[in-house]
Image (cartoon, rainbow, N blue to C red; front, side):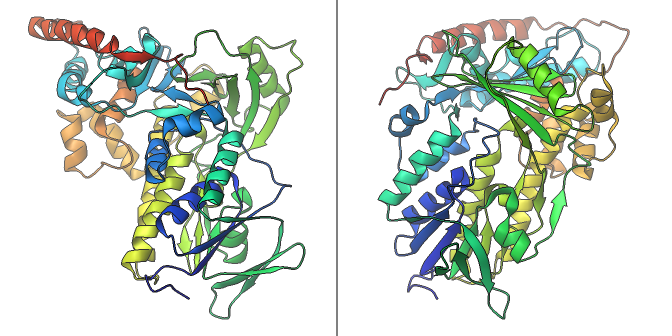
Length: 501
C-alpha cells in the first residue's frame, strides 16, 4: 500500500552495517510519512574491508543534514585528499603517483597544461607529464594540509574521509533512530512471498512476522532477499578482477597524520594504509590463486614491520561482481547484497548512496510503481561497470611485471569494449579528453582521472628520441601557478588540527 504522497507506507530493511543504516537515514530524512523498520542481527559482524570514501560520503551527510563536526569525532575520522599509488610501476620517475579529488583550480589553471604535456610526451618530447605537478590537492597532501580553507577561498574542493566503519555504523544507527527508524535486533529465519512474486514478509527467529510494502536487502554477501529469495542473477567479475581475499590488521598511528590513503603494490596484490585518529587501518588485497592466506599475512606483516608482533590479523573473502537487477519487484538491494568491487578506489559507499538516492527519485517519478525499474537498473549497472573498468585499468596498465600475478594482470584480455576503446584513445588520440566525450566514453570517471592513472604509471610510447620543445611560456605559467598554490596552501588548515567531540 502507498501513502497519499505515493510513497510506501512501510519499509523493512534487512541488515544494518554502513549500507543498511545509510539507507535508513536517507529514507527517513526524505520520506517522513513512511514507517521504516530495520532488522539487524548481533550474530553478523561488519565486514570492514575498507575504511575510506570518495566525496560521496560528504554528499550523503549533506543530504541528511549532518556536519563534519557532528560525526567525525565519533568515528575517529580524518580527511582524505586522495590516494597515493606506490610501486605499481617500475618505470623511472613513475614509481609513484597521487590521484587527487577534484578542485576547481585544477580545471581552470593546471589540467589544460597537463593534457598538453601528455600529448607532447606521446610525440616523444621531453616534458613533465607526471600528474603530481598539476593538482591542488596533491600539493596539499605533500604539505600535510587538509582540504578545508582556514580563510575565504572562492573555489570548490572535493574531499573524502577515512573512518572506523564499525563506529560509523553505530553513529548512523543512532541518528536514524532519532529520525524515527525502528531497530529490531533479531535474525531473519524465513522470507514469505506473494503469489505474484513480490515479497510479503520476513519471519524473525522468534516467529514474529514483519510485513511491509517495500523491502531493502542489506544482508551483505548473503543477499538473502534479492539473490536467495527472488533469484536475481549475479554477474561475477572474477575474469576481470583477480583479487578475492584480504587480510587486515591495525598498526600504531604516526605522530603526523597523512591526508591520503596509500595503496602499495606487493607481490600478489596491494596493501592499503588508512590513517584514523587513533590507528592506521591496514590490509592486503590479493588473489588466492597466486598466494595463500598464511603467505599473505606474512607479507603484510613484513610490509608493516610487524613480523614479530602479536597484533591479530583477520582474514576475509570477497565476492567481486554485481547483481543484474538492483531493484526487482518490491525489493532494493543495497551494499554488498547488490555487489562489490574491490576497495582500491573506495567506491562502496558511493555506490550505496547512488543506489538509494536514484531509487527514491525513480520510485517517486513512477508514482509508486515499477515503471522506471528497468531504467534504474541500467543506470546502476553502468555505474558498477564503469568503476570496474577503472579498477581493472590499474592492473592492466601496471608496469611491474616482476611476478606471475602482475604479468597475468597486464596481459589479461578479459576487459570490456569500453575500456579497450579508452586505452586505444590514450595512445592514438590527438585530444584524449575531447575524444572521450565525443565517443561517449564518459562514465564513472572523467578524462582527467584516466589521464592521471595512465600518465602516473608512465604509460607512454618508449621512443629512442629525446626531442626538446620550447616550453618557456609553459614554464613561466607553471612558476606562476606554483606561487599561486603556495599562497593557497597558507590558507588551508593543517590536517592534524582535528575535530573533537
